[in-house]
Length: 272
Image 1 (cartoon, rainbow, N blue to C red):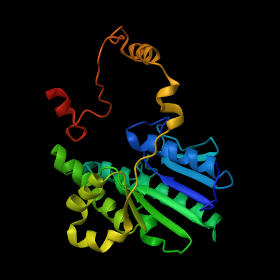
Image 2 (image 1 turned 45 degrees about the vertical axis):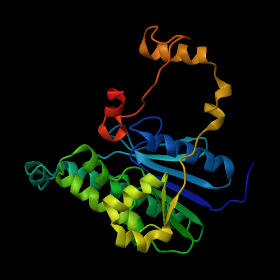
Image 3 (image 1 turned 30 degrees about the vertical axis):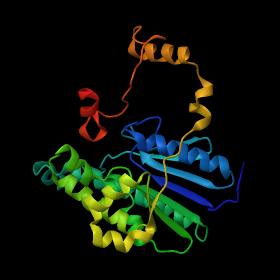
Image 4 (image 1 turned 90 degrees about the vertical axis):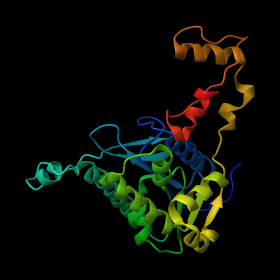
């Protein structure tokens, strides 16, 4: 069922997608969001700006969603000055900033093309992709939303990560993206509390409290409801992935899907 179109243009930013560069849940989430934005409001323009899995930039249109893929390749890396960056081991930081600049430039192009239209821009806090755009833009017809996943500050605390120059820059970019958003959305109250504890602090969180909302992640019930697949079909599918008859109709299995790290609860699964 279609409803009144809230925005003329939707823009989503990420460094992964649900097809070419699947790194985690962010791409899956945005795959659903972009698809259903276009489905619910077919007259709206839906853009997804994300990272290329190759050394080339390219464009695809899937389900009416315009997907722009940007390589993180640095065009000036063959210039003489770049040897200083390599020598001092700052290349990862430059590559990271270079990709964000590509996203910002494309968003600027889209905003100029659709000047005066009602526009929604969403950036995950992860990697701070919206830090330039969110800091510069202040318009009544543009809504800037930051969708919380897991801030790097929380990952550092939970996994005991070493803070490098690039991760230090990422921490700052994530913070800038969050505080300059019009809306900060978390999928659970726990994620909201993590943001307060690890990133904002209570004083700033109280100032931004009216902007912070809790909205669960979307679920594609049509494709993943229980009525669409039988247990035997599921068993056959899982066994095809494993490559042998590991599951059958008598086994009771608990599956943990995600990256193998502390913050995903892998240690709890092993312990159990």
